[in-house]
Length: 136
Image (cartoon, rainbow, N blue to C red; front, side, top):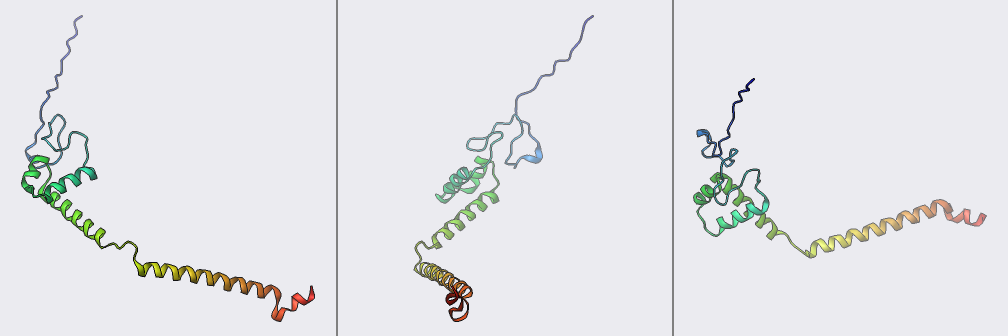
């Protein structure tokens, strides 16, 4: 008895769909261009930061878009978020004297509140004008 088996051969090469020409993802078997993500890779913060720094150094956004396989609008979003983060961090004040003074005042208020509560508790146990103390 002879068994006839069909031999299935996988073709190694890019799988391209006309509708995905601008896509930033790659189909199985498709080789990623230089600098873009490989199969199964994700855009990490580090990679995004490097791209934004390249943009800030003056590299054309169109060129980076083609090299990396990322849409221009997405690259511009990353740049705007990075600039907003820089602005926010520069506005932040370390060692703000007003905040330090407020923190000191809040600490003192807490201490005084605790003292008042302890004195109220002490007067409740001793009664008015110390009558309970004299009964001991």
